[in-house]
Length: 255
Image (cartoon, rainbow, N blue to C red; front, side, top):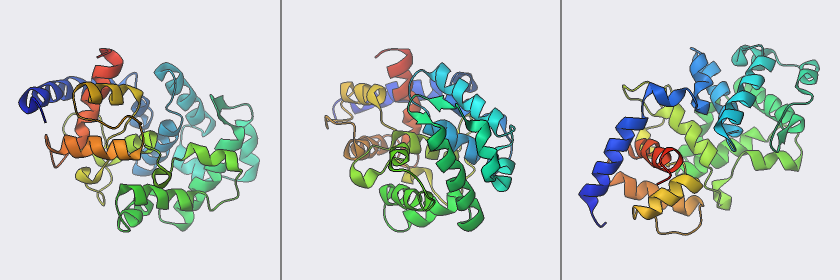
């Protein structure tokens, strides 16, 4: 890699700049930060990450609305969820995610916590079958055990079909990474930070290509893997910490 030291210095500097509580305020991760229990943070984080596309302000507003519809107690709501609770979600929409989709998600989450031991266990079990692509695919297979319409499947990405699974990888970063900066939670102990894949979108992809960290043209799973492998050269134990740097450079600095 050309200019290894220079690129590492840039990424380390920007990681320290953006991995800060100041980052939380306008980011979807602010939603799970409103809660203190593991399950509340998981459910709030997963739902917030699921709808994390478009303007960040709009994402946060929609996620706050979802939490309010769940009585601001997501874990308790999922535990006690019944069909009659669905009517309160009539009219909910965030871009292409609508009432039909949230209905499936509520049933799926209840099934995961009641029958399968929770989200962390599903991802950890899937990881034992292969890499993170298998972990996400396993989670997705169990998620859609419940009755659902085909349209809802697009809201849980499948890396085995080539998707970069940006929003799920972002959610996994929130749950798994642990440092002293107070942004990511680090509440999942059965997955290591070095097993994570860097979230990839148009912004981080553009920055990564400009820095020579990514050659693949498409923003797909192979590209996310390529980017993560290159980031491991800078920190093999915690490569996805540089998501903060790539995101900050792309979104805030228009690098």
